[in-house]
Length: 150
Image (tube, rainbow, N blue to C red; front, side, top):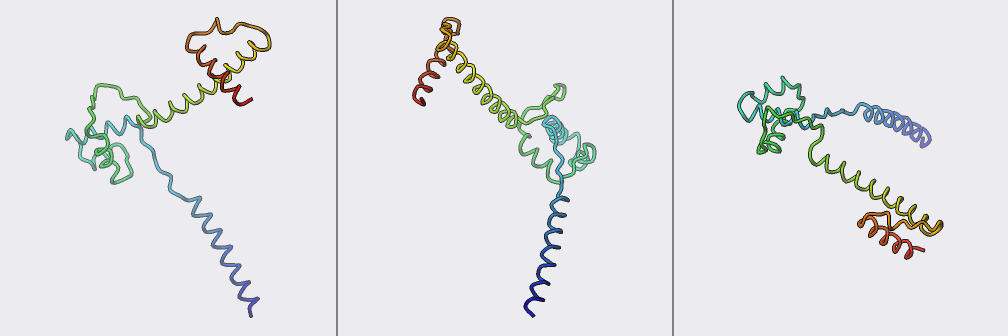
């Protein structure tokens, strides 16, 4: 009896796993809207040129509360309809992108400083006199940091 009940328990668990994986693949995919479109829609609604439902239909916006959220977020910002707001990202997204770029550039600068230090130490090339003041200071800090590691 116990063996039969165990076999019966295995079958539903496999079908449950298949059903869960099917549900995961059928998850909703959300549509993203550009920053410029959000600002345009908010301007149209706040200025009274369109009602919210009209704006939803006109701009093909799926969510019922999205425009309300956009009004809350962007409603107090000044919007000039003649200006071209050609931003695909919100300011926060742009800040994150720029922070990643800064990290990348700092890494590249460290690599260049390593190369300059190698030229100076191994090939007796006086690198310091060709560097700007700021890079010279960065090289000194980099050398000190490497001496602490080594």
